Image 1: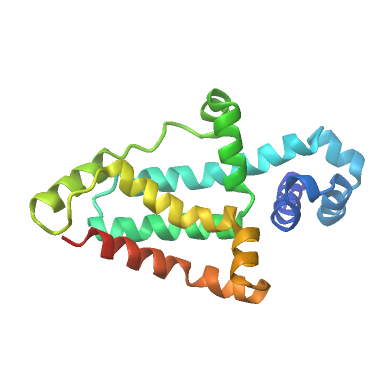
Image 2: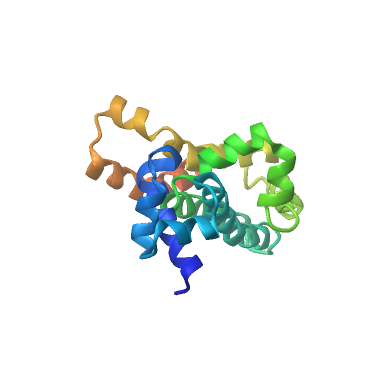
Length: 197
């Protein structure tokens, strides 16, 4: 593994464990097995490193998301795969949702131009599948924007609200992991039940 990739992995782990504010450049350098001066040579600030690591994660996910949305997979399988993709990605990169929400609200043009790789995923195929399934009576009528919003919210919100959820539900770390492990199945069940005619 090259130096830059070691930095990315060390930073990713630090951001998962401590977030942007809690992670320290010295700690990231130590985890990567380099000195702090070399870390600053590659990335001048922690914010630049955070953006670069997040961009790498998004760069890996967006092509998969694009291919999935535009594929000929059956509707039910496509929805299940989308849920798997979102929950798996956020589980491994818990710092990403807050970054995306912050950047999209603070600097939407910068986010779309510099963070998202290539064209945005096109939902037209999914929309056609929803229309057909509705016309055939397999699902109840639903606007695609509502369905996508619901799936995203159910997959991402628990990670954004982890401190609140743990406090309200009285979950310790092990209970949180158990909850996250069951999240994909629960979201799939909820979505399929909600779409029944």
